[in-house]
Length: 328
Image (tube, rainbow, N blue to C red; front, side):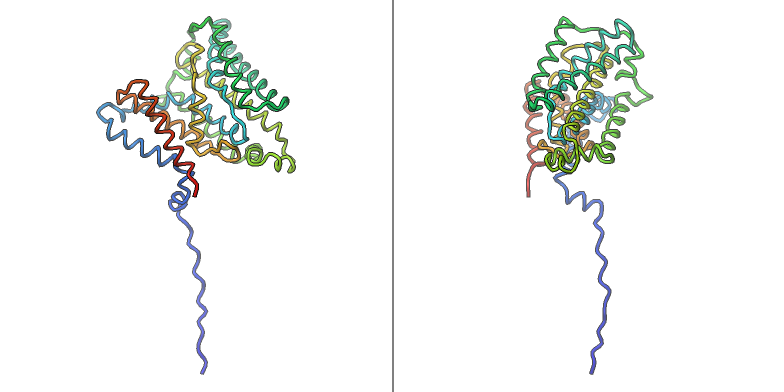
């Protein structure tokens, strides 16, 4: 007697949902969980202080725009296995040179001088790092002091006013309806950075250089050129940030951008970028910058003293970074 054998078709594999994929990669996505959690906590505890007021939320964007723009460029630097500690000081220097040039010859000259300043600093950083072999940590640390010293020297440690309304509108002080111009700058920088890192040959070579420079070199990648370009991009982004600082505050000051390098690097780690190269996302980087701005704003509304804000901010960042760096 023969037994009938039924050949059942194998069950089709289940396609993981977007949510399950997101949850399975929670370490990479911790920045989004953290941002939402902090936003909800501040919304519940600081509602009477006006945290959810539209003007306050827009102020968070305005206050973090320069950090976000520098963070976009820093993504490329860190992904290539380098670091740039001079971005804050360069932003302050560019704000001063731009303000002085506007006073001498108008906004067009000011923008040109600002761009030239960023380009010059980037070329020096890149040349010392790639040609002389000095680690970028030391090169940019030295440049941080040089840029700040030059800014103090040429400005006489005083503020240089910018009286051109057109420049102030475009570079940080204007609004397109209810939308701050600075938000437009963030969106443009974020989109351009994301596309360049994920959709171009340059972006793939940056990741390859940071992941394994020797292997990248043997596959035909000019790692020296890549390192040069990312340091140039970083200095140019710092120059843009400096011009935005000057436009928003309608003055150039050497103090502008002071300490921003720490916030930029913190935003990098919060956003999932590896400090050892080869891994990072521009969107995560910008979210990290916004998260830092959110924390700063919330602590300010709580009425904490500046010293207490520093302690609380540092503790929150350490906790968030520690969670994101946990290994299985």
